[in-house]
Structure formats: structure tokens, C-alpha cells
Image (tube, rainbow, N blue to C red; front, side):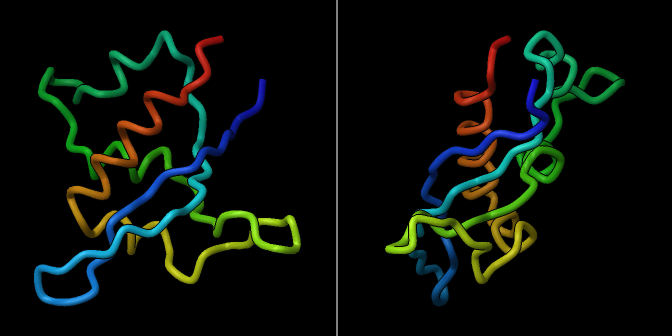
Length: 103
């Protein structure tokens, strides 16, 4: 089984005071076993983990979508840049959960 997988998503980037631009990217994710998702989303004490905590744990890299060369390359911003916005972290987590291989 592959330890990473990737999928397309569109994440908001802050471009001005309270102004966002949605940028298409390819997220590279660290895979976790599907049967461990319930434990993964919770703190050991039973409280829910934040989207930012979850996204930081599984989002490995952000890449630019395929260009004319047919290859993906790292994006000009980093994972930490994406996770500064709560709404971006929520998009990352929901995309991860939807695309997580169920093997």
C-alpha cells in the first residue's frame, strides 16, 4: 500500500484584508488506515482535534497542477501557508477524508 496519495483541491489564500483567492493545487497526503480514522480525529481524552491539527498531520506537500510540461512541481507556498486559514484547513481535512483509500 502506498504511504501517500494526491488529489486536486482548491484552497483559499489571503490576498488582502479579508479578501481571499481560491487557488487550484494538488495536495499530497500521508495515508492512514481507514479503520483508524475515528481515533485519528479525537484527542486521547475524547475531545475533537481541530482541522488545523488534522491537516498539519496529513498534508505533506502542495504542488502546482499539471502544466504544459505534464509534470507537477512544488507550489510557491508551503503547507504552513495553507494552514494559516481555518477555512483552508477545513477544506484540506474534508478532501483528505473523501479521498482516503478505504483499503
